Length: 85
Image (cartoon, helix red, strand yellow):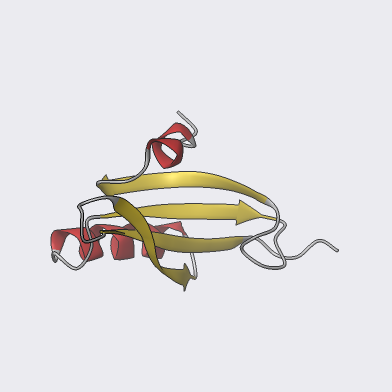
């Protein structure tokens, strides 16, 4: 079942040994909000890195095709590789 398009931010933090791990996820209303939230979380020092995402035709964020809109700070290589440019 196809759903609506969704925007969100995935945060990344560092574990006890300094390894980058997945942190909190936020849903957003549009790409501008996602970019702003991701950048703000990193610039504010709350997280090591964050990525703004767009997911097409998703019922939930684990469905549909994800496109990375922007990354800030430290994020896994696979997230950077998902940038559309």
